Length: 193
Picture 1: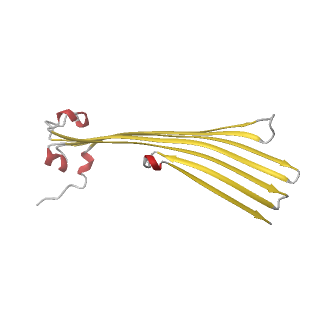
Picture 2: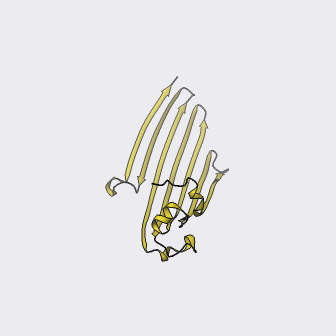
Picture 3: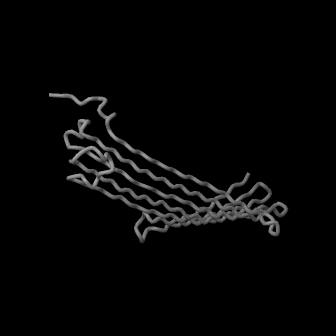
């Protein structure tokens, strides 16, 4: 019987490159010709990329038992969100109204490709020799999901004593079955003091 060298993984040849870009932006516009009216745009974008390669050569336990083992894992993802918000707020004597309208869209996309190769003629090219593997296997993953939201909210307050609010919202998601993708939500609330 023999044991695995706990430092054997130091002989692995690994290349791991990752990148991530994130941007968030806000634009707000107030309309001087319509008092109390404003528009706000929120945007966000995230991009991620990873390229991973690992070669276990003949000088490692795993590599010696399989005549070299190469694993690659390459993936990237993109996410974005776009929110349009319009607001209107005014006071007329003891009356105050506040309206908010929202339209939001977002998306996420992910793609991954993995490969494993075994039984190489030599260790010369490390992780650049996948085509020289006697046995190869691979896997791919992909998904994309989209979401859309629409919302309207109206609040009315009288003399800072009585208030009522009505809200309506509609959400859609590509993750749900086609006949179930859209859902509507409504609420009404109020208070007095």
